Length: 453
Image (cartoon, rainbow, N blue to C red; front, top):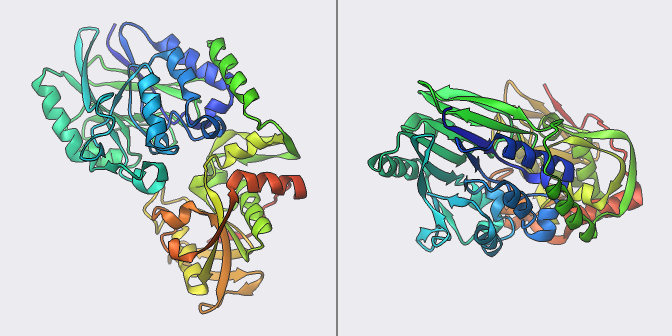
């Protein structure tokens, strides 16, 4: 035997699927053992339907069944506020590691968390440190009382402390996303287990193994720390016969009590929520959300940021419930009406391209729109054509735009929009979607709203 790490991350919407969560728990337990540490790297309390209803406490069903060794924080673990995640820390069995989340100058939840830890597994002393993306303050309003510092010096300090105490291998539990690459180049660590970005990955940078599973509980990563170099392999959760039935029963009970099981529409042609659908440009799921915002508010334009439409391999299909719609945009964010000039609208469409905004992948398109058509020139990185209601946009004209309030408060996507653009707040996103589904139905199509050439 040799020491192993069993790694899960970004469970998110899997908490709303009792069978999948039970299979995830079963897979983690089957891979656990005396030679292993089960570890999580954030966004494992939410977002999701039950996360909204329970303030993330539904995650305790998974944690209690699996009993992970360590966990670090993702940005969405703070969606429901500092007090809510603090309660989860106290009640969950794992040790929470955070080297760069600060509260009033001290480590967040200092009495219940640690910056780093040492464990001897199969005779090898393994040091672990946890870090969270500094983007947390911008992406999760509930984290507002906290400060998330630069993870590189935090990890460097932890490495020094761990090696001084005899660590033979150092592992970073990271919720940095693309920041893992810089961390690997600047810090002398053996393994970085990542989260935040939802695509599977195994690679090496400057001798460091970097690995992450996909989101929503479909896979886990098993890392073998034996031999001259650590290695990693994916373990698929879907289809496994290893199931923790008690987890499924507990989640089913929570769903039954949630009051979100009302059927509001029927979908004949399944609507994809794949990565391509949410981040690849115009899609049926994006058009559905943007259309609902414009319908409800009467605004000239509907806009949904792509990062707010949650990826899931399960499409919207058949009888659609309120819970299904919550899972599309599982945040406590109101739909807000804003005023924008044509010039601001043009800048917004430029910022929709991942070629321009340093967030996510350069191939992503960040804007799902309604009432607007845009032609984006990839080679020249510019908007070639822009119309609202079929008419060319005039730079000095004012337009109304319905979007999630998040994009007015965060500089991550569409930094052109700020609090100054806000006119009014309305219902929560999923409430608007549910009203739209009841009144109009759900039958979106792709119409050429976004063309990238």
